[in-house]
Image (cartoon, rainbow, N blue to C red; front, side):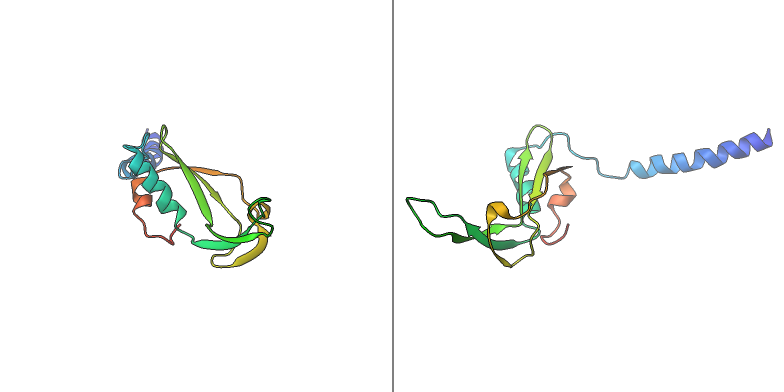
Length: 127
């Protein structure tokens, strides 16, 4: 009987500790409170890595040469129904110019992650 109580104590204490720790964590939002909050979440995530420059192809009637363009390394959309940020990132170095078209640079499959208020409040440059 004493052995059973000891085994029960050893297995139950970590579970109780995990439950106590999980109540302190901020839970993810299910829905954005407003469109402005969703836009803010998306913009704060987008600005974290800076910009790079590359070329956009020539458009026949307007231009005959590719033109340089400065663009963000990250881009995203906010899903208003589920409080998710749908993010995409180019595989480039901040502040560098690439003599390739924007379309030819590698861009990974979109990453979806839950929005948490504390992420939006972090300073740009932090991931």
